[in-house]
Figure 1: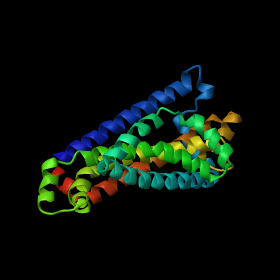
Figure 2 (figure 1 turned 90 degrees about the vertical axis):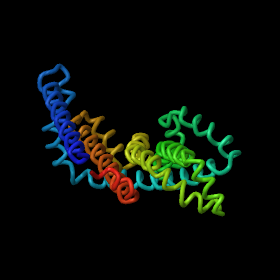
Figure 3 (figure 1 turned 30 degrees about the vertical axis):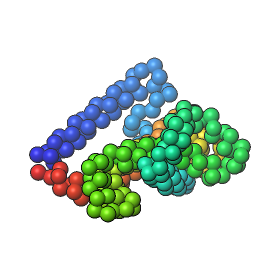
Figure 4 (figure 1 turned 120 degrees about the vertical axis):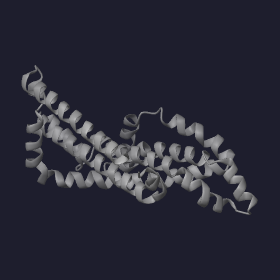
Length: 255
């Protein structure tokens, strides 16, 4: 029954996607903005044509996104564990995490370019800042959600903090952790592109700025399509890792 429900959801999603493509095509063909909006077919054709040129840009953006993604995960795990185990750290750090999300990244990115140049480092910093928050908050919520009775039982059996974390808190927090990772995986590509908009010589963001200035909107949409596809692939990879990491959840969902 579960598999049938998933199949039905996929079919509905495909139907909605097809409907959106039709609406896009009609707007591109018959609206007043048609010269600024290429049709889906034009975008696909352009993507095939420019793919040899896009490869170096895709690789650059993907590299920046992945480095920033993994750095943000490491920082988030360390800080979430400290906040969960040391109340003073939580009281000091948690408000700063919230405040940090009120600062627009697009305002900080130009400063990173001035401080660190136009290489890869400022783009990685932007990715870290974009990706860090969802993971640390999700993981901290997961660690805090552990049943106190389970923790007390482990303590009564002589378990230390590491054993409690390994046997109770990590398994309970995995759904929260992977939920944050899925959000972060899609944010990572976006963060790299935002950083590239402000300077550089390679990357999808740089390519988009160049073709936009030449009014090649079909190429802009082709780059957007690549960004969407990369984000979807990363999301799917995280979903597969989640399934492999949580076999007990997979068994519970099978009917």
